[in-house]
Image (cartoon, rainbow, N blue to C red; front, top):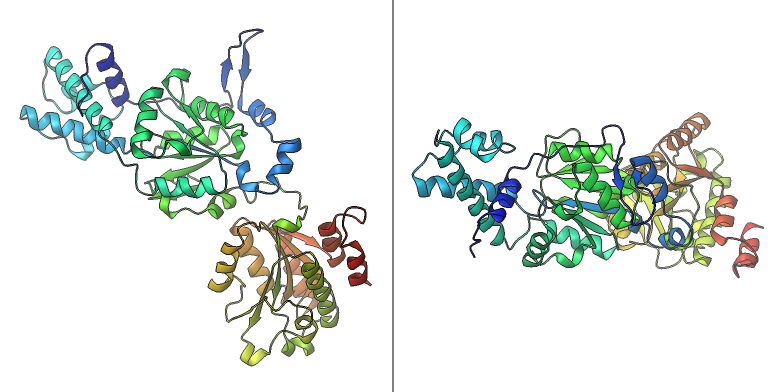
Length: 466
């Protein structure tokens, strides 16, 4: 397919290849929204974060699928489409057709944001004649248009990542300096148009990168501070952070400014996104049965004589296991080197469901491969109630690993202990400092039942507690 470039169309393609966008929002400024009726309104970053907060019924819906509270914003150039390679091919094609020296990668990096005629006369030195330079610039732009029109595949990993996001109903937007029709046709050729519910293109009149990202947040109906920007440029990373969004550098390992860097989007999983927001202070720690799992860490026979207050720990853990069974909350149980340290105590085995498989381990953390596989199968689980021993070793390391993966962790203080009281106290304090919630067994059970008037399980709970 060949694009016939002439007049205004040629100028558009020349502007597209001469990308040099301003970052914007250095001081939190946004842009002016012009309305049919009333005064123009200035939308800055703080205003948008406040006005786009998800509240009321919409927030209640997100309790079922909290991942949908995030918004994903993708740069078309460099992330979805390999426009850098397209530009390289365009320059190479014209050089070969005209018998000129093929530009090196270093030269192409240098001319990336330059006017084409200047690049031709000052850097590549193909010609010093301005008229000739303009003709060559037109040829390069035309070749770039041909490359774009023939692109049928997105960058590696893009389609797979978009499919993952669609499964958990995370809304996605694409931003581009191209016009809307070109972007739509490009996405259609790549077979990924269906994954995007919004686009910000040249018709939207955004003057800076940050304005495009803010406009995308509005179209996604998500606060900028709940959005993730996927970009391949340093300017894009800076603009995303100016908008209070998270920034993922794609095809770049060396960008320290990024919240996360990947060579390919195929490296990502949903928990990577949760982890970006894990310590943002948005959680209030309200347990929901449909999103909760109970983790029982190494409450084994051999520890009866060494763990402080072990009978009380076992009693509290037993109540929680019985409550989890009554509320149909999945239970994950591990045993530390059971050949030497014995199996889970009989008081817990008596009330655990047969389907609960006890996972043997030699690592301190519970997150061994078999437990990670169980977590992946429990895709609805976002909150972990954690009990067990020892509080400063296995429980602590499990809590930190779960927090790192983006889970909300509730450690039950009366169901956790160590061989020394000091270790227990400091272990619990360390978990709280890292973002975990501390609770008691009664606090957890009453949160999960929600009240005697609305839960038929309340009578059963009263029996469990007493």
